[in-house]
Length: 116
Image 1 (cartoon, one colour):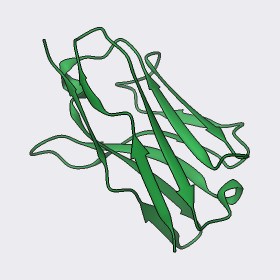
Image 2 (tube, helix red, strand yellow):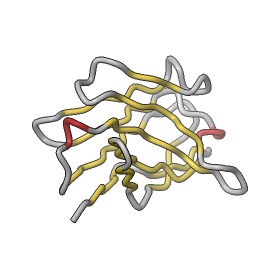
Image 3 (cartoon, one colour):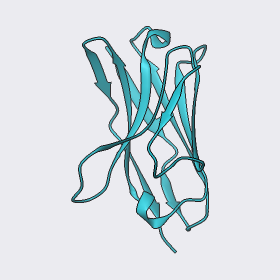
Image 4 (cartoon, helix red, strand yellow):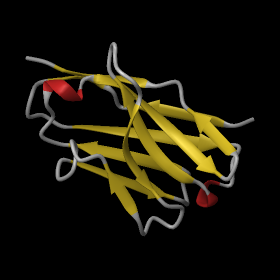
């Protein structure tokens, strides 16, 4: 049974930081491209950042470049998203995603709210 369990969301003031983590089980983790997506109320889900299985290549949405950093620990089957200089427009539910070929798995999401 595949499970992706996110943690680390919460309420933070503008300019603050949060670190999201996603623990995977039931998959050969190192094969999978891991990504973080987010969905704000009334908006479509969008890709925030992704990282290849070996961790050598990353990709970021333009809106988060220079502020967010994705990383993974294949020994622990975890992927993290360090979010700095948070803005109110970063408020959304953040989802962990694992993709390899036709296999596509999602976590349940964690709420991030940026507000003063």
